[in-house]
Length: 117
Image (cartoon, rainbow, N blue to C red):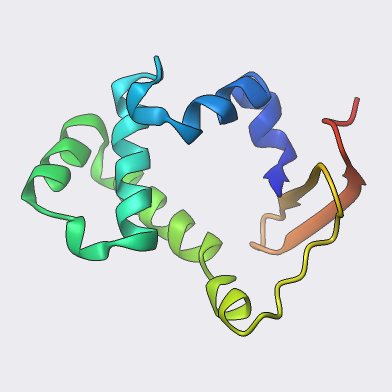
């Protein structure tokens, strides 16, 4: 699943390809720091050590850091459904695009195998 507006703002799928191997990518260091935090939060919270906290503080304001943490927390809420095998894909191939409403609700868009025009 991809947030359609994020793809449009980020420059497309090429940016997402870089995220897969972000440490070796040419993404800006601030992106890499944010991705390190996201990885730690979603898979190994114990890896959020003083060094990572210092990196986050160097690249982000306190408000930005809180926003990252809140976004990851909101976007990780599906882990319960995944663990209960209740998070079935809505597409059989390709990518499903969605948006988040101002109220925080997921809005499933039409299902596309490529970015819609």
